[in-house]
Image 1: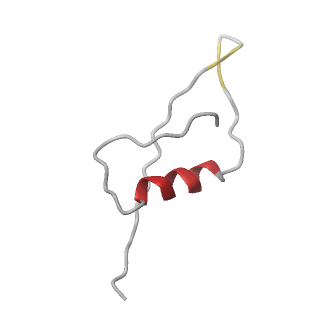
Image 2 (image 1 turned 180 degrees about the horizontal axis):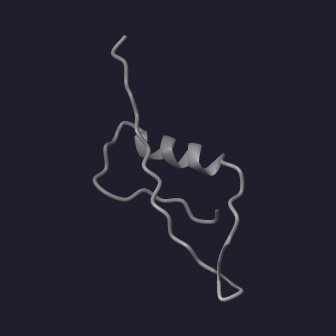
Length: 54
């Protein structure tokens, strides 16, 4: 995983940075392959936050 970025409307409050931090900590993914060649692959991974008002 070489490039992690957020898409869509910014939510603010550090949520984008936290999503990037968590996704960056995931185990390495297997690269995409097409016709026996490794290719760049883009993947959208939905991330949901549940906030508590304590």
